[in-house]
Length: 123
Length: 277
Image (cartoon, rainbow over all chains, first blue to last red):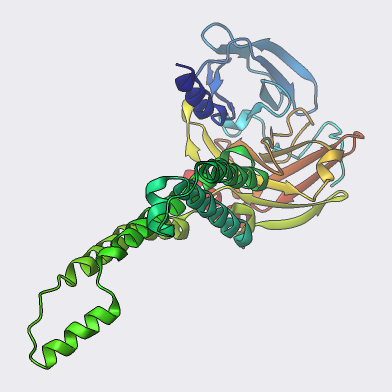
């Protein structure tokens, strides 16, 4: 028995895999519904969801519910939704990546880079 | 590196030889005499110590996981080689000596009566044994040739400088992103910073598109050892012009960004994005 347990422990010891958050958002009317989870298909119940304007302003926040879903109203300015499972474990859904969103919903904005809110750093 | 492999094989072989000599049957074959009990115990101890030393050498070089597997690999080769060699050695007493064979040939030429010697049987056995030995070696060589090249040693790896640190960055494999749950494509990248530089680095992130805040800087490079891996999603509406963005946050709060051309860093990812648009 001890040998078996040792062998099992040995086999399991190196089986450590990353847990990457994934998310998919859809627009229906004026309501955005996001389904979050992890890459292996498991739910991410309780993970923080933030709706952030390109300007950096926090527009809404919440968390994934028991069905690993999050609902929010469609903002009136360019935005992105951040599924935040911890530092370095995030999933960003730009408004242009939302299923059902018209490409010209917010004209003259680009996904990424264009009008950052004073993102710190050296380029 | 080759020296460590050679040292592993030779130490394993020496360990197995000591263990074999500690057995009366094999010591009789090899030394033509039995060894005293005390010496057999000593050889047995030496054998196990040498095998343990080979394992320690493997683990010191490649850490626990890879070290253990490499040790087992060389142990197998050393064991198989020794088994066949001992069998051959034991069979030597049954094979007529070269001088005896020559005498028989001479007798045959002079028409003298000779007895039939089954010389082809040991030869066939030797060939069969060699074949059995060569098969796993051939398999090992085939595996070695087909093993994936380390990403950061490939010629497509980028070697650059971000802030005060030099780094090497590459896609983990040259395949398109893997589509996982919720139809999200994920692509893995590997990074290694200069030796000792990790002490000054709090976190390094990678993402498609320029980050809008440090919190949204992408997925972090993680993992044991000096090589870290990040698995990043590819946005639905990504374009090849978005670029891949590396963000490095230092322990002193400094943050550095660098953009990489997707086509340059990962042609497979660029192709995937092109097909999707």
